[in-house]
Length: 250
Image (cartoon, rainbow, N blue to C red):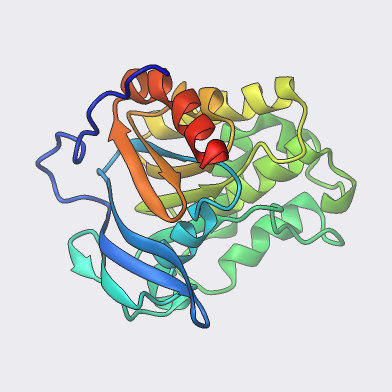
């Protein structure tokens, strides 16, 4: 088996991170899932969190979004400790999630889905629609169509556009490739790359490494609730197959 490269501790970025997890422990009831997870998402960068099923990736996103409290350790957003903040408070602080399963309202049109984000105030309907239809021209063509009748890829675009409507500091993407054809996944990740180029900080969770590594500035591989290694996409891409194999054999 090929020797794994030394895991780098964190991205080389001196600015205040959009997100930092420090030695986080978390789980459900008395079942520990995360076992000392430390991870940094620099401002305006894309970090890919990779790993097999059951590694703890989605639990990490739940912690980052406030949907799951840590049992120990710290969660910081933009330099502020948010370990005890609610999901609503974190959303107002600029953390926005696109969960696995997309989470659109199927009985509402594309435009009505976008409008839902304007009801809490501070965001104009015209601005939300303009931003969504500029980033995702296909949604402009489907603006009067019920979200439930869109293709899987189009629903994912709608979910992402709704998340971006609040101009978040941190975007959390959970398995956006789930259930989609490879060509659609490729198109979605091209869009992720374009969104990243606008300056958004993004933490993207993926089981399938290569698509996410193609847009990432930094990557981490998680197994059994721990970060196995971190590094550049090139470093991680060269080791991820061995890490997955070791996990299966262990």
